[in-house]
Length: 260
Image (cartoon, rainbow, N blue to C red; front, side, top):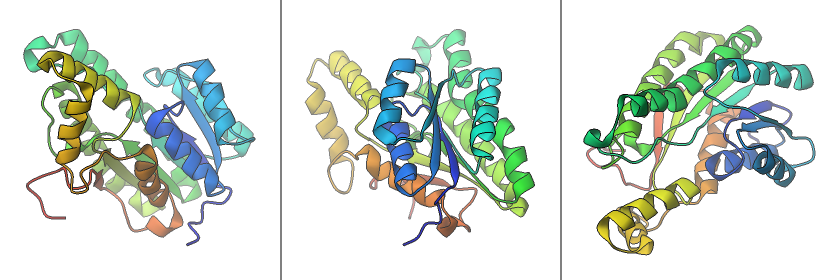
């Protein structure tokens, strides 16, 4: 299937590892010209080398609107446009409500909601003007089913889903689609960290925690980053021209209480 991604210009945030890196590799494999960002310059450079020879990589703190704006303008200056933007950021720490502070809430809003907003503000006017664009956010299955111990993520990522739905309605008439991809338990460093914390709290092994998570899925296993990336790549393509305003779970049946 030709996805129509050849020579499309794609930005992928937090792409030095994990889900972001898998998405960047997937888009590059389809012929897109890829620009990636992350905070750590060394890991970002290593990621760029693993993606391909013509990858633009710039260290960016996605919570800083000015840095995001400069990054997007640099991509336009080099490649001529921005066709696809995939927003992504690490998740807030695992805490219960009583363990959180006001500073924790403010940091979570900056990391997950405001970072998405910064990219939307930087890329959507250009997408609207050219009559084609894809804005994709990567959040969490917690948008559909809150997860224990992740009240910060449960709350703030739900706000991102609301933003996505609103933007889809505002920009659809201009050929721009906006979607949210919600990974379930996926093999990343963040998942390892969460498993480690829960294992310590429950005085058990990380492997036991991961086995419990896997048992909640239909296939009884944790996803690979590439399985999530394949969905993002499809949504970024011409083939997904009628998909917009959706929060799509890639969770292998983890989410309960809904059909489909």
